[in-house]
Length: 150
Image 1: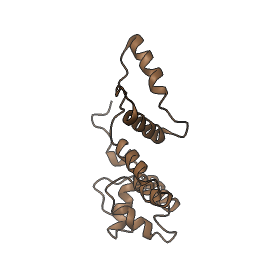
Image 2: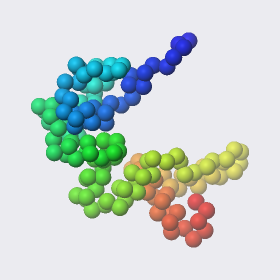
Image 3: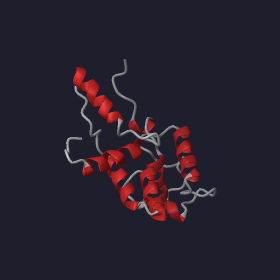
Image 4: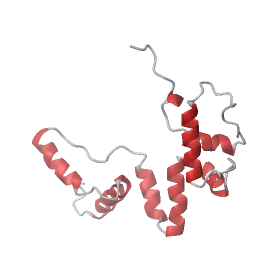
């Protein structure tokens, strides 16, 4: 059994940190002096994600979108979602979803029979479209529920 855990950089998504480094003008990520170097495949995966998201061009430089996203103090996918929401005129909903991703689940599921009933109630608020729309459904239901017990 190991006496220490592997460094976090070896087991985390590097997309946001790589975007931040690029925004600081650090383009040669393989020669960057990391405290603990990340696996090369993790750096490559992060760069591929950034290119696919339109934040880094094929030339390896930040795009205008990448520069804007790098200024946001949130993860890349959240920032991308917020910028896209302006175009789709759903900014309020996306800000709500972004905020809700920073908290733990709002449902408390007790043990036993009460837990089974609570789970059935929780399922009413899930969305086939994904977790984030489920968050939004919960919030709007909570805001408009006369009993306020959700």
